[in-house]
Image (cartoon, rainbow, N blue to C red; front, side, top):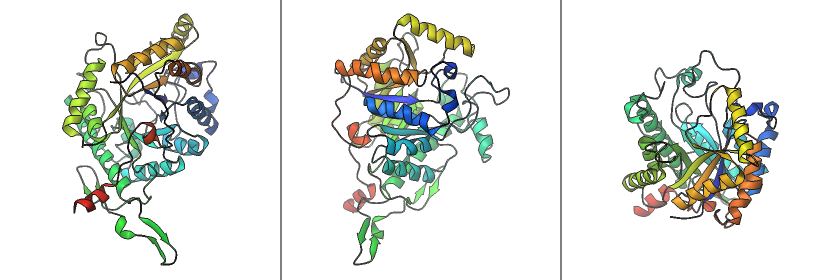
Length: 407
């Protein structure tokens, strides 16, 4: 248990409210510009926020949104999250860069090399957020799958959908392959012996020889082992199956706790207990899973102004804001209080989802962070340059070194 947390931020186009692009403070003409993303991430970086996730998707409609009759009053289109992160990597100093990747269609080899390259470009600040799924619209964009995840089952339980269960098995295998590829070069594989004419010690580069249910991969990564050894793997989890995926394969899990009476099954103590049990069963000895709780925030100088802003956005969208995460609408002090409550309850971090960008990003950086720092709620920054070091995660040794030692 701890009373201190790391702070993260989740960036999503114009913000997490569907009508955020219509706000006077929004920059809808700049959503596909490099400057827009540079400004957001520099603001978060300068504030000392530990990491930023960047949302992404593989279809024009949102997940499970009907393809026919696509709403025209919401932001459509986006930039590739991995490329955004790669662009801002040399323009930022400390913040971890964690783009979102859907596991159903990209090849893990391509994702592994892209994230390794990001780790080099950022000097050790890369991670990835894996999303399981293959919706109808996504499948139509790739044309390689006849079936996938077309809807959440009526029960809301992942266990009741064979297609979703398969998607999570695939995501777990995807994460396993990433780690193996990231380990495939030993740290000392490149020797650069000019006199002997040997650039590489080939005995220190290992084919992963992976054969699974979804992937069959023989070779090694084409990218040498990156600064963190293994960039961070993160997932968002709401219930048992994704909790188990996180416990077995992830470094960080984002969860969405609510008041127990408000949403049964999503009380924080129950989530933490289930994650602990899954980790005891599935996780290798070593680093424990880091747990970040999500909050969607809309911030104004007064509670009434915040409520009015939300009402205006809801009216524009034609429906009240709906989110898997708890929504906090109020002042910077209200948000800081919510973060402190989660810190006291034992999470390692809190990820804030700004309802409006850039307005709520600026409010987080300029008002919420100083409040949390003044009360000692934010973890002290030990000066570690890598994202792993900042989250107190050790740099893992390549599994192939361990295998050699065991022989």
